[in-house]
Each structure stands twice: as structure tokens, then as C-alpha cells.
Amino acid sequence: MNKHEIDLREQMAVHCASLFARGFSVGTAGNVSARLDDGILMTPTNSTLGSIDPERIAKIDLSGNHVAGDKPTKEVFLHQAFYETRPQTGAVVHLHSTWATALSCLEDTDPEDCVPPLTPYVVMRVGTVKMLPYLKPGDPQTGEMIRALDGKYGAVLLANHGPVVSGKDLFSAVCAAEELEETAKLLVALRGQKTRMLSETDVAELKQTFGQI
Image (cartoon, rainbow, N blue to C red; front, side, top):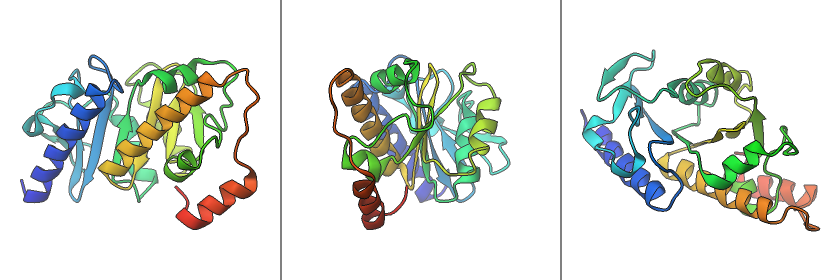
């Protein structure tokens, strides 16, 4: 195990504990992964993000074989799908955070644009979010649905389940997941109110200035 992998394992444990401490994950819900040159690190199955042991974080090789640490999360398929279809992905965060999950349960959430451009930061850090149909947790078909998106989305909402957010590195993925959650909270809080979204021109300017997600 080289220094980069040791450092990344420690970073994962710190970020996971922070997410748990601030209520973005409860119990054994949620899982996090990060890419290495020779594989992917993933939080273990049936573990709490609040007390991840860096040395026990699972590692799979680029073919999906479990090579080190505890058994990986049962959601391994959705993580792999992001890495395979979005080469820029360095980390993936899947949470059952309250407000984003609430948004995934509402019948009138637009499945093509679950998180409309309410603030500049959701545009800059998350981008357009697509809803995927409900499947039971750990179903390999979830990965196939993400692959079918051809890397067009950096984040998705799993219906009645929660968000999955990718980023160029672990810090970026965690920040994007947090931004999505806070924006979902605003959207639910503002339901029924006359709400001003950013215009298409505003969104285009943000994408031109800060790049596409």
C-alpha cells in the first residue's frame, strides 16, 4: 500500500465522519468511494460512516474484484458505473440525506431536472440531476441505468432512496453532495411559494465561467 492510498483512506474516514456527525447519514446508510490508479476504495457494507476504520476500507481492482479490506458496499455497482462513464470522476458519494431523499419521494419532482437552478452554487457544483426509477438497494440494474446515461450527469436521484453524486476528487464530491442536500431543503421549504429560479442566461453564464459538471 503506497502513501497515496494510505492518505486517501484517511481522508475518506475523516470526510465520512464529518458527513455522519452533521446528519447527512444515519445508522449504516450511505457509502463513499474514491478512485486510485489501480482500483477503487469503497466504504464497507453494513458500516456506519461515523466510524470508518481507514485500514478496513474495501478495495476493488479495475475489474471489480475485491482485493483488500472488508467486503465493499452492496451499492458497488452504482459507484463503478460513474467511474466507467465519467473519466473525470475521482470520487462518488451516495447518501440517504433527508431533504434530497424527500425530493426523490415527491410525485411532482421533475425526473429530468430534479434540482432546478435555484442558486448559482447548485449549478456550479452539482449540475442537472436526473431521477432514476426505484430499484431495491444493491440491485445491479442501478449501475446499468447510470451507464445508460453515458456520463451526461454528475449526479442522480434514486427514486425513494437518495442522491448519488460524483466529483473530480473526494473533497469536490462531498461538497457537491452537501450542496445538493441544502438546495433540496430550500426547494422543499419553498414549495407552494412563488419562487424565482435562475434564468437560462444565468445558467449559461455560470457554465461558461466555471465549466460544465
